[in-house]
Image (cartoon, rainbow, N blue to C red; front, side, top):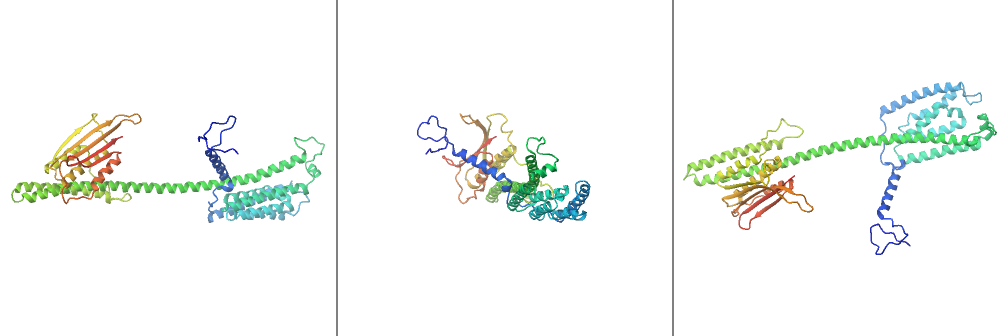
Length: 482
């Protein structure tokens, strides 16, 4: 027995000359998948779980009107045919013939409510009329009515498995009836007499009987096949329309969900901004309040200056809190008006931020360096805001949690050289260091440092936050320039 192995595996020996390469497992799985896809694409496997919804009262009303009009036209066509196609030996008088023809139209009123039942009853009627009154079964109206019953069954049946079983039975019964009719009811001489030819007359490619049988077979195959094909296309189109409608609803729900998530993310961002603003101003207020308490009796002027700083910081804090909370309280669906917000701070506001801390007793030195002219001036607004908030939070942490009296803030840009497999990377880095010790009893929540890390991750950056080897604390964040 030959053992088949997937392609690309090592069998431990050389290939045998003259043998074909083994078929891979991936190829077999692909072939099985294509066969399964083809099998599921067949009508009796297509979306068996979906049911086409039945029409409402208005649809049934249109069916009744349509059947009435079709019955009237069929009666007119029957009268036309009576003048040249019916002989004296035909069964039934005029009213019987009209009554027999209208029998199949009665079922069509319910063709969309009970499609399979209507098809079966119409098929039985067609066979009975074809046996008892063949001229009626060959009229255009009668044939069209039966075609409509087949079409409606395939187009509207909700139980697809029962439909295809019924269609198979009907088609098999009809062709069996045709075969029986040729073998029992018709003879070779009757067919020749019907077409006014003899066995010695010149014929086409086939003999007269063979040609007639093949012609009848192909005609009925086109008749039944056309009804089934048009009905299946109608059902599939309805299914696709419903799928598109469901997809539109899903897309609308997804769009609403994305909008809601965008609002939530924006409000979370604003909440972080609010934390940074409040932490900065409360830190300044606390420091100035302590200074004012110590010099209140000995140096009233210094105490007044500290109280003035507290007043200014508290007003700024309240103003910024109102602006941010106004956005948080506003709704994306209903709002009294556009939220009043000041422009977000950027690199231009860093000197004023440092000046505020210097006026509050923290000696802050600032260094700025660019590896290319204009890099820092051309930072995007979100990145500039992240740089500003990083410096603000770092200095606020120094004032709250450190004994340091001075700090150094460095803002610089640079680039890493390209490697064999990596392109050059441009970055902007902000670093804040101090030489103090942790202040006892001032443990924080950690939200500020977490906010710095989140801002760095937002811009594809990295952080280095922690104590320095020589004493003090370092906050260094490197943002990637895209």
